[in-house]
Each structure stands twice: as structure tokens, then as C-alpha cells.
Image (cartoon, rainbow, N blue to C red; front, side, top):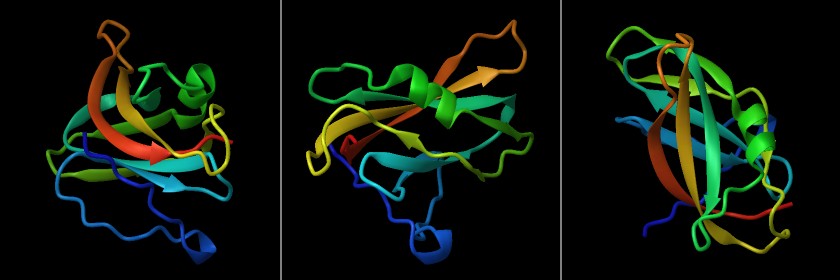
Amino acid sequence: MQFSMPLKILQESQKQLVEVSAPNVLIYDYLQPGSYKYDVFLNKIEDGKVYLKIYDANTNRILSEKEIKKASMMKVVNPNNELKEFSSDKNFSVQEGEWGDYYGSRIEVWFQPDDSGKPERKLMTKNYIIQGN
């Protein structure tokens, strides 16, 4: 498995710049260990919300499930097939683990359509090295 490190939020809340040319999820360290923000880049997608599910890569145990789902939920819509960035305005925390105790995780981006007749679906997965708080 290949793992990425969370990106940095620099002074005055400026995010580390990364070139993105395909659907992707970027995780950023935020203020204190175990606290994160994220951006998701999506092509054409109907009205709905995205949220994160985070799993321990070794045990496959879901981490801070209810808290992360609630804190990472954000509205998305992109009627065009051009890549569009969506940024979270809230941060989320991973409770499992200790400061400085880094471990592999699997970050899944899930989509909940506004149309209740359509099922939720997983959009993408990416592996990150994280720590708890």
C-alpha cells in the first residue's frame, strides 16, 4: 500500500499548494495533532453531500465514525464535467491514538445524494499516515 502524509496549512490559513488533475481527496493537518481539514476534487456530480469514513489500515476498524461523518459533511454539486474543488469549513478529529503515534489509515469519500431515492455511494479511497488526539 502507498500512503500519503497530510499536507500543511501554512500561515494565515493558506493551504500547501498541490496540483490536482483528477478526482482526489487532500487531507490537511489542522492546529493540533489528530485534527484535520480536507478538500475533495470532483468531476460532474449531482446535488448532494460528501463526507469521510476513516479506517485503521491494519485492523480495518472505522475511526470516530459518527463524529467524523458529522464534522466532514459538506454540500457539493458540479453540473459540468470539469474538475471542481470543494473545501471543508470545519475540522474533524481522530480520537483513536496518541499525539506522535502515527499509523496508516484508509480515507473513503462517500456521497449522499439529495434525491432520497438514490443510494449513498463511495466515490474514492486514499491512504494517509495520521495520528490521534
